[in-house]
Image 1: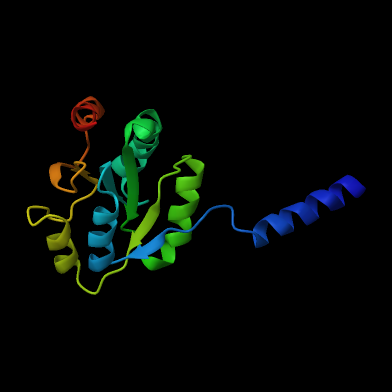
Image 2: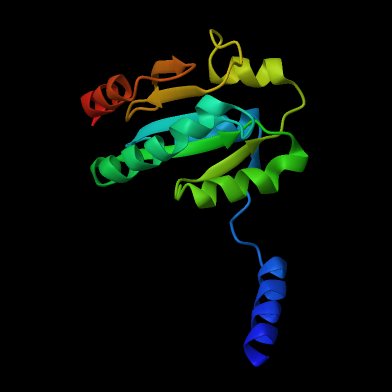
Length: 159
């Protein structure tokens, strides 16, 4: 009986305590600051959403790529494009996928202005990966389902 009560109490406490860190909001200014703050490293920015099947499938692979090359200077950053009410769901997914990269959620007044800030050639389609060199210059984008071997080759070239 005590064991059952203890399990019920632990379950209740688990519901009160966050199981993951929620992605932080980011806008156009924050995005520009984010890229600038990573100068000296190779930066891979992943725009994704929980409702995007290819995004969900790629995330564990991106986490592995980040872990593999982190010591050499790669930094993965994820930016969820989910609706605000799905921010907790996005955080939970990242925790379950064991993504240790900084996590943000897009919160902007104008999607068009934000997209223009990231890349004028980008339509906003997901998944979208943007690769920046150590000077902070965007050198390559991967829109749609990504060939992970091509992504890894592009990352290795910049490290």
